[in-house]
Structures are given as C-alpha cells and as structure tokens.
Length: 321
Image (cartoon, rainbow, N blue to C red; front, side):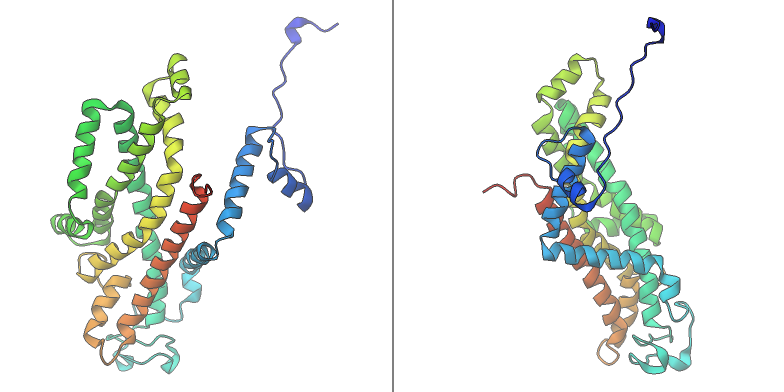
C-alpha cells in the first residue's frame, strides 16, 4: 500500500492540438472545446476565417507585411546610399543611370531614400503604438472603474486634449520641445491617447458591475488586480481596432511634422521631409515629391483596410442581423 504522505495530485496535462491537417481543422472548429487553450485557439481560428474572407482586409494586411519586410531588408533592397549626394546626377528622371525612381535636388537616389524611410515610419508607428494606447487604456479603465471624482478629473483632461486638432496640438508640443524625430514621436503620443481612454472607459462601464467582477471582489481581489486582470483584457480588442485605424493618422501627422521641418531633420530620409524638399520641383520634376507621397498613400491605405477588417472580425455584433 502506498503511504498517504506520498500521494500527490498530478497536475492536468494541457491538451495538445492533434496532428494532421484534417484533425487539426476539426479540433479548431469544435463546437464544444474541452479546455481553455482549445477555446482560445477556436476563437482565434474563427476570427481569422472571418478576417480572411474580406479581400480588402487581406490586401491591407499584405501591404503592412510588405512594409515590414521592406524595413527589415532595407540594406539589401537599397541600390544606393540614401544619404550620398551627387550633384552631377541631380533631378534625374526615373530609370536613368540606374536610379529606379530618379534623384532629388542633391542627386540622392529617391528609391533608396523611400526604402530607408520605411524604417523611420515603422519606428514612429511602433513607439506611438507602445505608449499612447497603453496609457489611454490605463486612464480609461481606471476612470470607468472608480467613477466619482476620479472619472470627472480624468475625463475632463481627456476632453481638453480632444478639443484641439491633433496636428495643431502636436505642432505646439514640438515647437515647445524643439524639432527632432524623438520630440515628434513624444508629441504624437501625447495627442493620441485620449480616444483610447474614451473607448476603454465605455467598455469598463459595461462590465464593472458584471457578476464575475462582483465574484472577484468577494474573493478579496484588489482593485488593481480586477482592473488589470479582468477589465483591461475586455477592452483590448476594441483598442486594437482603434490603434490599427489610427495608424494612418499617425503616419500623416508624422509626415506633416516632417513637411513643416519639425520632425525628422535633414538629411534623414523621412517621407514627409522628402515631400517638403521636392515641392519646389513639383511642376517640372514631379517624381521628387510624388514617390514619397505614393509611399505614404499606400501605407495609410493598408492600415485603413487592415483596421476595417479587424473591426469586422473582432466585433461580436457584426455578425448579427
């Protein structure tokens, strides 16, 4: 006989997905998941099926994937040094002397500068995405959960920032902080968080009195644990959709700051600054400003299409009649 002291409960082994395409698909499409892991996988699979059925959303995803790949492999894709000047080759039209998209007023290869600019665009988008939505999510959930004077103070601050156009307010911050890509990112992040706070607050108000929140309180969970573990995850999907839709605006704001000389400084190959440099050649050498403009248009279009697709795929009410 075994001793009772040696009896130990064996922890359950997480269920693994079955091997084989047919078995895996049936496992992902199960109507009765047998574990939390399978339930999450089923939900993710159904979301992907809904997203992939939208051709415009897939097109947007492909554009963003292409942007990421171009930024990652930029050194391999560039044909010239994006900062190298050659006044003897200035303002060459596309295709001459090996310059695929022509050259600018200082003889720099526009194709290589557009490729290098993709890294700056992703850098700006990445930092703003890390800072603004997270801060807005925290402010919104705290405001909606506690209510009272906390809600009043936080929402009035949010309303004050929302009262100003984003670009105008960003210009004010950059003018106070000084030109530069770092200050431009900080200014964009400061002006971008209020919409996320409003969304998170609205989501929090709908769930703060739910039964599972009340059960957590009865079990002795702290307010911080309830907000971070139970309320924030409920707001993530809505915030992700809003972030994706706002990417185009972030890119345009960064390009606007660069166009006005308050963002990335020369000779940095930032798309907005490239358009500013080429505007004096717009009538005769149209390619100098047009090529970075097309890049901004395509990336903004990709984020908008991706955001629309994610909104339809993640919204549980979109499939209802």
